[in-house]
Length: 354
Image (cartoon, rainbow, N blue to C red; front, side):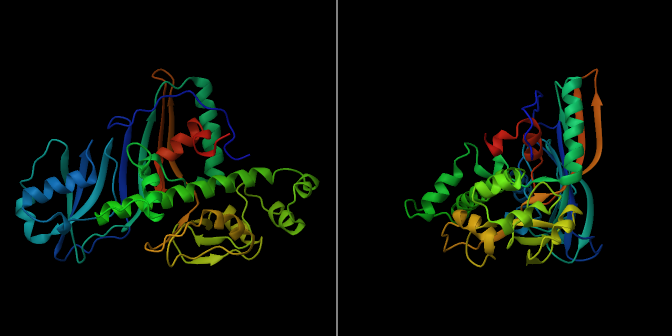
């Protein structure tokens, strides 16, 4: 069964000693052009805070600074930003205790949100005894083979974890937020909550399909669906009409037959979940029967699809018995959360419930 292990006893403190993330750019830079690309190391600072400091120093609008993604405040992070080339001499004099410019390059275009291939992480877990370390090695072996659910992490839901509730009120007309950016942020948190709830149900359904055929028939599942699912080797079960994507980025298409499940097992494709809104592609057939329960009417916001299952690329694992440290280096595609991996290892019930 997927992520059915008991909670593990270890300690994780998200700070610059135990958490490190580095962006992997989507493309190589041109080495020429009107945009100065800066590789920035920041410590215990959010990306907007870092951009505000640099824009204030250069006396320019924050909108003139491009970035590919928002990086965590708690930890040591490396990311690329872009500024107009004409500010090169000024930025070379920039100094801040928490922000350091490590590299420079040139490019023809401004860096934009999403211009990011993946993120490389280093995570140090503490107070890990030998028994827990053995279990961690075993769980990670399974994740290497089958991947993990791509839940949105807690960061998406705000400091108090209730941004999605405010977003729901906006959608239902119970709340009005004049600030457009805040309005969009709150609605996106609600979209993320709906996605997480859908993914949670799909994992539970995948575990139910571990039952024998006669038991599934007794529960009311159609024989053709049972046959379709039982032919699959991956523990996360695909359904007819699922919207699939080439992994990690690619064109969306409908799952038409169980043969495509082999491509999922080979990490060539992955199912996607709905972020409800306008223009988003919907699942069909049996997959739609589940998805439509989470397809809240969001008329004024564009919807999207999100990869529902990701395959972390583990670079190095190390257990230091003397210090009781378990260290992991791994790569995740953009938009995926390292904290989700940590939470799933520590206690999967945090996402999946009982």
